[in-house]
Amino acid sequence: MPSLREYVTFFKEFRGRFETTGAIAPSSRFLAAAMLRPLRQRVSESPVRVLEIGPGTGAVTDWLVHQIKPGDTLDLVELNETFAGVLREKFMTDRDYAQIAERSQVHVVPLQDFHAAQPYDFIISGLPLNNFPADLVDEIFDAYFRLLSPGGTLSYFEYMYVRSIRKRVGARPSRERLGRIDATMGHFVNRYRVRRDWIFVNIPPAWVQHLRKNDSSQKG
Image (cartoon, rainbow, N blue to C red; front, side, top):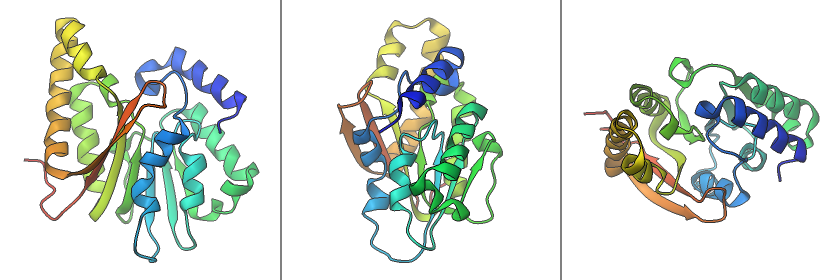
C-alpha cells in the first residue's frame, strides 16, 4: 500500500499540477490489479517488455514489480520530476524494486517524445486523459499504438462518467474539447477493446479499458 509520505507527495502535486496529476489520491490496489490483469494472465513464458506511463508515486508499480519475471524489462515514463524522484529512490531502497533495477529505467519525458528500440508487449497507462487538450490525446493514442507490439495489450483507466457529466455541465469550450476526446477514445475502444473492468473501490470509481493491437491497428 502507498505510504503516508507518498500520499502527501501525491496530494501536493495534485494541488499544484492538477492538469497532469488528475487524481486526488494514488490508485487503489483493486484498480492496480485490474490494470495488470493481462500481464498477470500471460500464457507465454518468453521474456516480455513492459511500459508503464504516468506511474506517479508508484501505486500501480508497487504491484507491477512483482509481475516482472527473469528476462523481462520494465520502462517507466513519468513527466513529473517529483514523482520520478520517488520512483528512482524506490529502485535504490525498496527490496522488491531493487531486484529488477538493472532491467528497469525511469524516463522523464512526454510520452509523445518517447522512443524505444523495440515495441512493448504490455503498456499500462495512468495518464489523466480527460484533463488534456484534444490534440494531445490524439498524439498520446498514436504513441500508445506506435510503442505497442502486434498482439500487445494497452491497459488504461478513466474515472466513471466524468467525461459524460462534464460534457453536459461544462462551458462550451470544455464541452467541445471533451467531445473530441470522446471521439478519439471511442475510435480506439470500438475497434480494439477486448475487456473493460469496473472498479468501484477507488477514489473516484473507475473503468479499466484493455485494448489489443492487431496488424490493422492504424488510426483511420
